[in-house]
Amino acid sequence: MSVLYTIAVVLQEAVVWAWRLAQVAGLVMGVWALIDSALRSPSHYVAAGKRTKGFWLGVNAAGLGVVALMGAASMLGLLGVVANAVYLADVRPALRYYAPVRVRSSIRIPGRASQRRPGGPGSGPRDWRPGR
Image 1: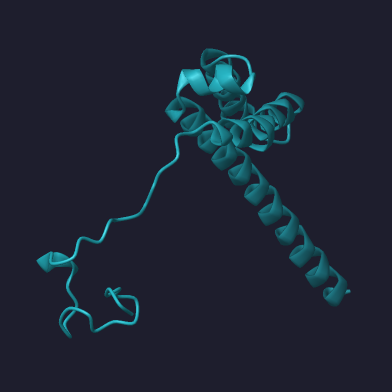
Image 2: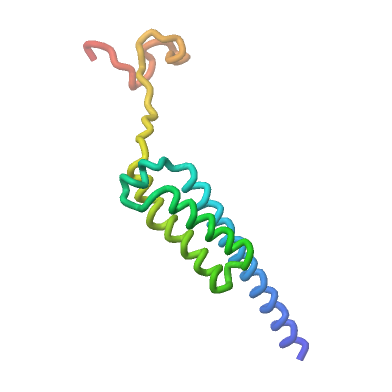
C-alpha cells in the first residue's frame, strides 16, 4: 500500500503545482494585457474598429482585479482570464497592424569615419565603386 500512497501523494503535488501555475499564468496574462492596452494610442483602437482605449483598459483592469482577488479558477476568475485572452488574441494583433512602422536602416555615406572598415575604403565585398 505504501507504493499506492506514494503515487497518490506525487500526483496530488503535481495537481497542486499545475493549479498554482495556472493561477500565476492568469495573473501574468492580465498584467500583460493591462500594460499593453495602456501603452497603445487611442487612435489605433478607433482605426482598428475595436471599441475605445478606455473600454479595453476597463475590461483588462476588471479582469486582472477579479483574477487577483478570486483566483483564476472561480467562475468570475475564468471570465477575467477570458476577457484578457480576448484582448491579447484579437484586439492586440489588430492594434499592431496600425502601429507606426519603425525603420531600422542607416544610409552609408562614403568617406564617413564612423562607417569605415578597418581594411580601408573599398575593402569589403559590399562596397560599391564606379566601374565595377
